[in-house]
Structures are given as C-alpha cells and as structure tokens.
Length: 238
Image (cartoon, rainbow, N blue to C red; front, side, top):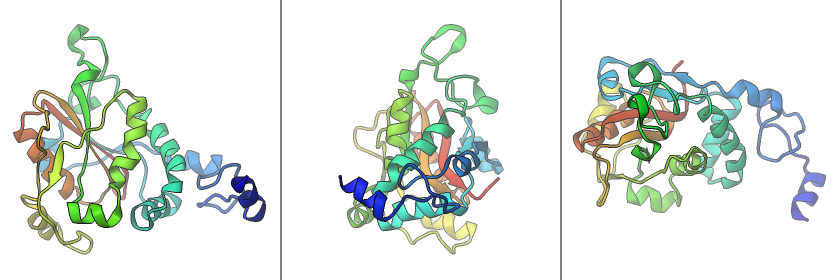
C-alpha cells in the first residue's frame, strides 16, 4: 500500500536520465544497458604478478552508477540494493567465472574436475574489509552488501576471510606512494579464515589505483591461495 502511494505521489524516475520507470531506485532499460560494461582493467607489473585471474570492473564509475554507489556507501540508502544487485548480476554473468583458465580468462569455476577444471567448491569470494570503527559507524560493509547475493546466485560463497587490523587515513587525495604507505600492514587473515588451496575472488565497490586490492592480495597469497582474481562494481580505469 505504501509503495503504491509513493509511486502515485512521487513516480519513480531513472537516476541517470530522469525518465519514469516501472521500478523505484533503479535505471530505465536503456540506461541500464549502457551501464553494464564488464571489462578487464589494465594492471601494472605488481598487480599483474598478484592477480593471476585478472582484475575486472562491472562498469565505469561515472554518472548514475557513481551516484547510486555513493548513496549506498555514504548515505546508507539500502533501498538502492535491488537495482544495484540487478546491475551486479548482469555484469557477473558476462565474466569468465565458469570457463577459461589462467591469466587470459580468469578463474575456472566449473563443477567438473575433468581436463583440469577446478571445482566451484574451491572458489571463494572475499570482500575488502572495513576497520571495526568504520564498520560500527557505517553499520555495514558496502562491498559485502553488493556482492553477497549476486555471488550466491553463482554458487560462489562470500567469506569475510580478511580483517582490517588498523585504522587508516582516507585514500582520497593521496598520491599512489602515499596510498601504499597508508595501507601497508593494514590487513590480516581473519581467525578461522581457511583460504589455503582456494581460488579467491577479492571483491570491492570501487577501484581507483588498486592499492587496496594489492594489500589484500598480498595477505591472501602469503596464506596459500592458489589463485587471486579481483572484481569491483565500478572503476574509473578503462
């Protein structure tokens, strides 16, 4: 009843173009089709050596997508999640999560073990963690909210295998070297985190320079992961 009244008084509009839509807090079909742009990100030598499964963005961090991700992260607008999950699912379906192998094609996640395939049971998604103080302040980890449901649809469990063991200065405005120093030693393996022998997908909302993903990958690699892949909801890199 409340939704009907809201739609009558404030008809839902696409956050990108302003056209009326059938569903609230999501894009019209035309804008949605333009937002879903899964692409493999260019990596420097250090990231390339750590991410043997590559790093992928589901879209470009701009316009309506940027606004919705910001509203979720900073304003706590969880009502945006259905629309964002629709976007995430569409992008993930286009990534090489179920075929290919090695550096060129991402992680193999087929259920069959024939011909060197890796069981889907051996694949794990790990969200970039927040410091406990930031988590308490915000009330949620946006990366976990964005990825848990779409990954579950692919039968890939999401596990909080990393912890942020010290608070850091916000990365915005820092140089690449400053970002690296800021995050050095900021992450550790969580108690009970069983990732040895696993193929891990590190997931986050946004990638700028990749420093955060690098520090997370270092911890996971040192703990015995077989392969590491990165997936972010959006990135300014193209």
